[in-house]
Image (cartoon, rainbow, N blue to C red; front, side, top):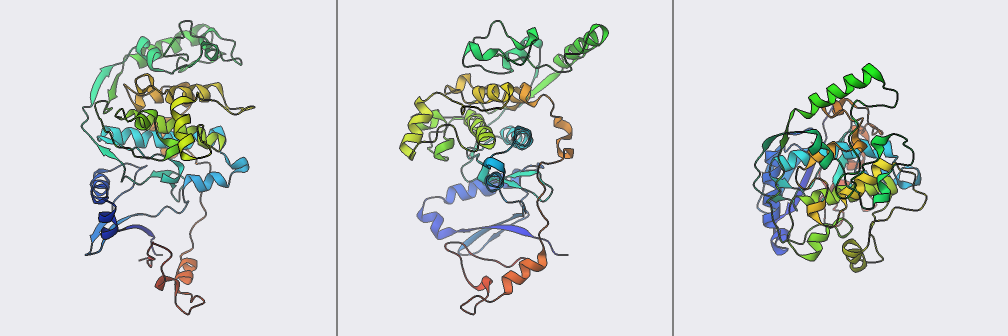
Length: 373
């Protein structure tokens, strides 16, 4: 039984002509640093006179954009979206801990492995920076402070919830939702007391913060529909751009489109900077999902969820309440790709085309075709 690998082949002459040699070098360096289940492993790096090649894992499930297009209504259920964004969140958390601001999150860059779990790919737009991991003491007040963000006071009340905990009296920026760990409507008496004690124990645990908040870049990079307002304005940007794109990413997975898309790139950029966030009429996603997206899509990066404490803040949001972060790799994925039949691949490579040449002899556009080995 053979193995399939993915090879990213870069034409050095083309890269030099487009002034992208430095980006290619940065990507290679970043790939060499990575050791995470939701990020690629660089098996080998091959240099020739004309080409630079990166050998990595082959993901048989394609990308999330293609997978989304195959879903009913061309969007994922909230349950499926939570699975994918949870794994992406852990990948971004690791990258920030390693001093890497990703800057190019979109469904096309999230690949699906053969086991249904994800792999974040393409680091040519990433920014390397300094990060100083710090252990801080967590507390109940800080947990409330970083739990979520709210745009309008009216949105601070979950209509489906009758408990006082669903309403934050001082809902003025930030925090409308409070993490309800180990809490349910049925708990009374002794169970409630035990849950409270457990919450206090959790609050006393130190939290590792590794967010490169001091990172700064003036580069105009990214995909138009995913660009953060600070990038468009040219004010300089840091790691908070990844949390903006994370919010756009979640919105697109659930609704099948991005929130600020216009008729053209110019209108899209205007919408990102000036238009308020809106959800489609009749949207039936949960209050927690909307609140998380609102917090991530704050136009001022300093008010954005994740700005100070990164993924630690976001993971505490009620949208992820039932996610077991330690055992997420054991969670059953929403979609398992069909196994790739190597005999079919080999037959396709060797079958002659209408010109008498094999598929491996011809090149499709600017890309090179390689036989699997």
